[in-house]
Image 1: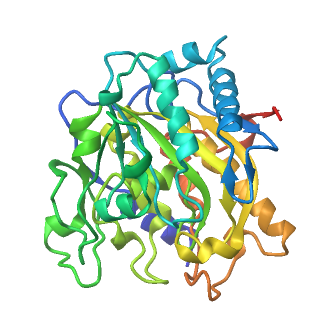
Image 2 (image 1 turned 90 degrees about the vertical axis):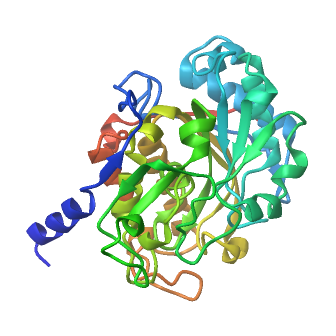
Image 3 (image 1 turned 45 degrees about the vertical axis):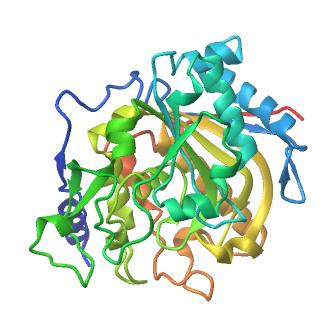
Length: 368
């Protein structure tokens, strides 16, 4: 295939039609939203005592969270750092990740420290909303059991629908339309060509913390900040990776995250790399590939964060004698022909963040 042909296909895929709420515009660089006030900045905080035998240490996580937030913002105290993003009038969502349970998912110790940080900024418990796409997965992960009393939780729909076009708690006025449908769907039906945003992000909250995990993904290459948004905040996502060869995650992910509502409301990205999975993702096959990386990452820029996270996973793969994700081939635990990590670079080209290593400012701290 020629370079001109490749570019044509990318352009066609990225020609997305958006339905956006009146008054919602993409944030300018420096404003809250994506890429936020600190484009290119990624803070990494590691602590040797943060995890042992896959059990998190809450006190270490607390210290890591405080250090990370202060270094990201330059604030003199953790409370002031959280106040850079949040105020008592905000209703704040926390996007969780239950996929791959119980091995590498959103950890209660990290979520509870995010909640403490929001409280320190004056956000009331009943103005915090935890979310993931499927109610059944949210409950299976146990999120509902350890959220503090008063913190609300919600979802997009009860469980996965064959076409993922159920509209239970999705906003029919807010969507991304792309020339892509599942093989069993109707390509002439606009409804089948759309991914609708959840009420959670369009109606329930005015700001969101994107809590992602450090994990390999067999179709997208990695599932970090960008994919936690693209495949968690909308429906009709299976069309992006419906078979091992019908895979368009490389362009689908940035097209979804570029929706003005998502770009405006996602103000902080926190990557839980205390545990990571370097292969077998996103589901249950990750178990034998889990390692204790013992770090948290902080950024307003999801592209820079994902560039750093991708490198971390590739370094671990090299350490154990595996090829890089981009050069990996299908095996019994990762069956897709090509793992499309190029979604990170394309997102950078679309202005969602910084991809160029020369412009990415990684600030590393060891505190224990």
